[in-house]
Amino acid sequence: MIFTQSDEPLDVTLLLFSGFSLLSFAATLDPMRGANRVLGRPAFRWKLVSMDGADAVASCGLPIPIDGAFDASGRQDALIVIAAFDVTSYATRKTLAALRAGAKRSAIVGGIESGPWLLGFAGLLDGRRATTHWEDLEDFAARFPNVDVRPDRWVVDKTVFTTGGATPALDCMLALIKARTGYSAALNVASLYIYEEARSGADVQPIVSLGRIRDHEPRVAEAIRIMETHIDQPLTISAIACRIGISPRGLEMLFLRVVNTSPGAYYLALRLHAARRLVLDTSLPVADIAVRTGFSAIASLSRAFRRQFGLSPSQARRSARS
Image (cartoon, rainbow, N blue to C red; front, top):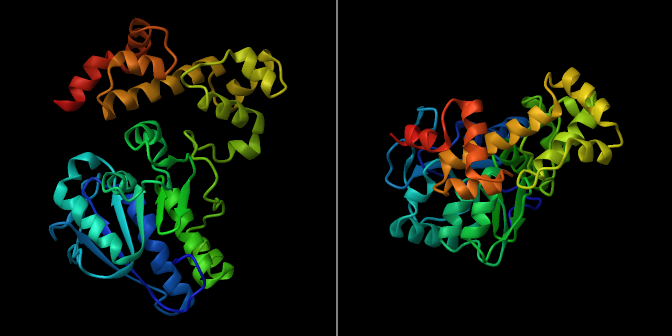
């Protein structure tokens, strides 16, 4: 277990799959550099590898120099898999066998953002608690029925840890630094990034990052959180207002002042953006997408989708894949 106090350097192998989020990569790697700087000693040592030794390319197109090909027979304290787009295309028999072999030679194996998908395909999450990026949680749970899927920001289950996107990865790394080197060091590393809101693993991943709205107008923040949890079965604005102890007219005025749109329009846009993610990032039938995002029929979704994005769901899918 690496989440425990130790003065020994932690050897970390970061296994990159092209298409990864640059921010998730930085949130995983740079806290280790920051800890070494704060502590004045090599508390962490790392190397960057890819399956074939070729440079990995982030989703933004930036190539990342690699130290070499992944050696499944090598040993490391932590093997961390970082992936995002097209993750299923990397789940080849050879890659999954290498992950299983590498996990046996690691004290812990981790998955960042879509990295948990590869761990899942390799069978490394069976019988364990795990998470992934919030956009994929439902599909992740359906694909891996033997995994106890949580909406948490990050999850540690004995010899495996998984995280959502970039800031959950940063939270997880700060927790690792705190566990190994102390609370003071973790605070100092967080201060390097002027990061003031480190979260626990059990905090749920939000769909909308509310930032200062929570402090400025908590009633709007609570209304948005309620909307997030009722994408598939939308509540009325009156019901949302009742839950937060305000009149529908009062909620309308708050949204217009804080978000510059009505709560109804915001709620619809939230559902439509969820639909668009499913259209572009999955192969789900449009009928299923309509159900998941609270539309009574394909026609209802298509009309609202076209008004919002200028294309029907089918047209948007074809355009993205052409």
